[in-house]
Image: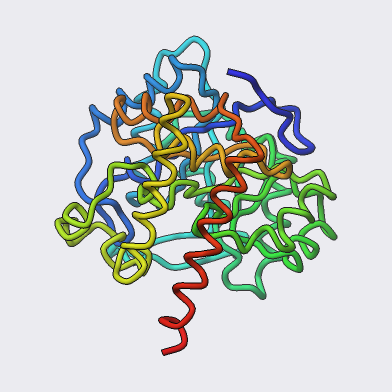
Length: 326
């Protein structure tokens, strides 16, 4: 698989990375039960097929995702890069909260290093800019961790342009992780152009909108989500949005079938077509899911195919407008 220059870092990353959110297992924002052996097999398959980076976070499964990543990478002679995040913490009862204070981030970093069984984290990111008034303290702390050699590169996630500028006034931002998909395109207006201008690497999350654009989702499957699957509460998985979104998937399927690609690969390729995007984070819960998305890294949508998707979305937007105004 080809690699791309990742912002102002010395990292060359593949266009597709392994997302480790779901493998954290059940928690307040989890994806339901998950088998750790399947998770390990998925990571092994991803690395075998050429993916060279994994994105996780301390909060995923309240530390469990990082532990599973460490287990999967144990003994590997050529380890992929490991990216993780801080600022989302949990109390004794497992309730999540946000904290950008220096002491908290130092504790988080040390805990992540232990769980990952690593001496250094390749990319350490602020997960959310919350509370906003502590962004400067949080970012300054990441620069201290970088100087101390605990992390190689530092970035942010879910920041807007003014927050990026505030961080840049302290130290260069190497990367941004925003949501970006066919169903969530608002980052195209300001954030992605700004990152391209500033040479900030961009790794987008949820390019398949939490599995909705994979081609495997049906109304029946959504209805049968376990109660601890956070997607059960998301508007894009509920009517009237769900039916419209599944119609989009049908179009992605038609486009993909022309070139032997899955709907999910088409959805991922759509995000990678943007020149500001370095890579897409793609979650997989088993090796079969990895096989179903790996082709996205080399797939290029034609201008006609992009126009076909845009025309469909324009028509759907016009149809949805009366519903939104009722």
